[in-house]
Amino acid sequence: MSACGTAPETPAAQTPAAVTQAKAEVKAEGKHNDTDVMYLQMMVAHHEQGLEMVRLAEQGAQRDDIKILAKAVDATQTDEVAMMKSWLTEWQQPSTVDHAPSAHADHGGLPATSAKEIDALRTMKGETFETAFLNLFVAHQHNAVEMAAMEKSGGANAETKAFANRVRESRADQIKQMLNLMNR
Image (cartoon, rainbow, N blue to C red; front, side, top):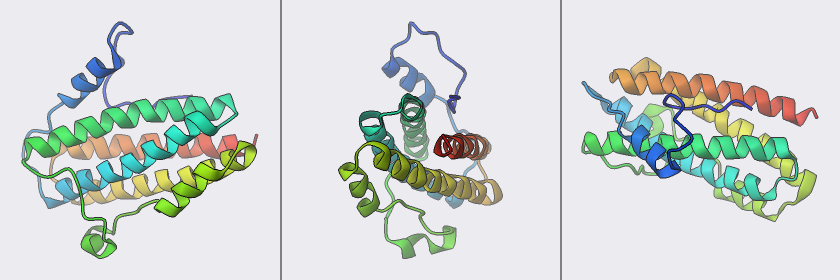
């Protein structure tokens, strides 16, 4: 399974905390606008939901290929959350976002996987869990692709736009991988 990283591969001798810190130190210098801020805030919330789901898959999936995908997404998105929060802190902006759908209508809304859907995953086992996880996570990652398009068209910060492009490409690849996993 391919992983979707935000920085070059790091030597195996580094600890996960050291890797996360190094990635968080990537700067988003230069001008930024409200779209950049909103994108990062929405993506932090989106990533946190994704992390919740993949951690359920790491524990609940029986298939190794699904567990490997979940672990790769966990590592990548943990690093990305640290990086996005560091950029927002650098810009003196909060990393949290109002989850009321109407609060983000001008930005295309806040695509979210509902707490009800995630809670339902907790109750599932075996093949039922794997099918539900893959279906839910395909939709979840599709939302990330849509949010990245919003940033690419309306953002001003070059590094944030480059990050959105990496998100768009990597999540599209993950969607393809998961569709293939569904057919096994």
